[in-house]
Image (cartoon, rainbow, N blue to C red; front, top):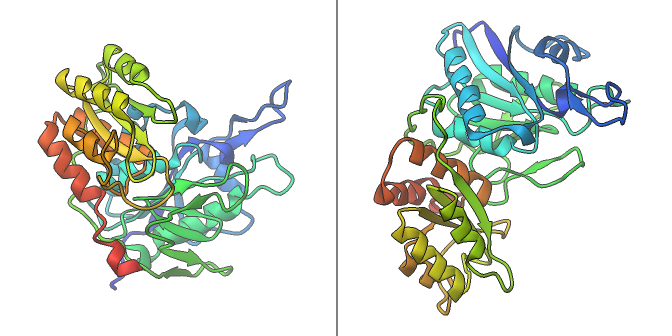
Length: 344
């Protein structure tokens, strides 16, 4: 694979645990504090490539909105447009990294990679993991092996494609997993980037303008034993343009939730069915309030996309004014199971 002509990597700093310090507050609560230059200065060795720092925001990712994520992705596009840039690293909180990374992947149209990373331990911990993660992310962002891979998460030495990735550990250092697509590669102790699997790239979707009006509301509602339709219909009444139903099993609910879904569709709210199960596709199999009845009610199956990333895709499509059929086609594409046959 030919090398890229870029001279440096851009670091977009957005906050998160990698920038957080617990000793700044009276109660010891960790808060995002360090800017990108401080985060970069934490490296114990020079980075693999020269780095230019851009501060975007400094917050815990649990505070980010869809609009904030659009802003981050807009900054990614600005950075990538510079031909002297080899790749982009985004330091980001782990809580919603899977959402922002997926939005970046959906809208990425360049061979230069976008690499998300962060930390599980704050910057003022005795042995922070952020510097090691950042060094690995910079190596991946500049490496020719990672060209054309889109948006990635690099954490604890592992490289994950954005689609299907999710946080699987609240505090353990190996925070992320991708149960359906596995690990795309890894970074060795000496900084060598090894790619085992090149994920299938899809045609990018446009990135909408940063919402200046009220964003399209997309809610996530859970199915659980004994659930009725009250919360789902409350979401509709609150003005939700879309709802992701976190269903059970292969995408099942019950008759009350199916009736609520039908009522939501009647009021032009798009409903997408995902699942709380960690791996495997949403496929309509069961009746009596199961997945087949949800399809009859008008719900769109999410395929392999879990609730967090289903919410991002649905939000993006609604901001792009896509209709129900176009949204169904997009979920069939981005939640497709066809790539699994090449991996298992």
